[in-house]
Image (cartoon, rainbow, N blue to C red):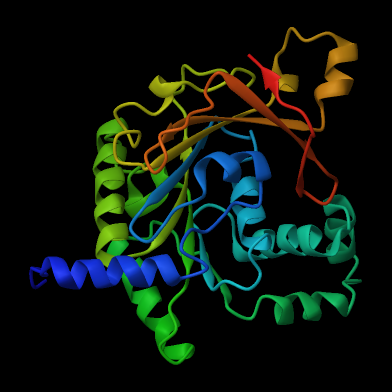
Length: 288
């Protein structure tokens, strides 16, 4: 790859072009998070970290659904595309995810699902397993060819440990750290906005808020933004009344914000997880 050696004048022109772009940062659609972070710019990595089954993939697809006018690729390295499509249809249509699964089983999907495809004409789902960064670049080129030179505004990678087969390598966090560094390099090289989902340390409990140490040694340093995710109802010692209250809630905190420096790690941002898998803001912040 040829080295870039631009003049300061050339870089200033690019900064002005970035400034004039109304989509300079891609927002998550989660107001409390966007108000603080703004979202990633080209070359930046926005990491969402949490334990298994805390809703990382749901957050990733919420970001896609909340940006229907922007071109995007959802690199689904774990879920097959059919599963991702069922979730996306529930989010877009407002139909409960459970009902979508039942309609699929009964061969009763409504014609409305075709309208969803029309509503997201520049979104693609890629479910190739153990995808490498070089292969991701190939998909970007294919996207450009199909859309007459138009590139996706952002990509979502679900999830970091499966990128390039890092998890199956048996090298644990060392392999994930290599992939995290490589992903940051890739984002800069491709000038791409990247949302990446990442497993927290196994020592972390899924009902407790992630901290700066949750991804230390495997992605925290490389990411420009780090947002933690947890669900309090997963606490095995929670009482029944609290369980009923927390069952449809997800919590996020902001652990790193390189763009603006503002943090929210001491604050819990609570969201309702609706039956259609969309996240809905609660109009208050809970201080931890």
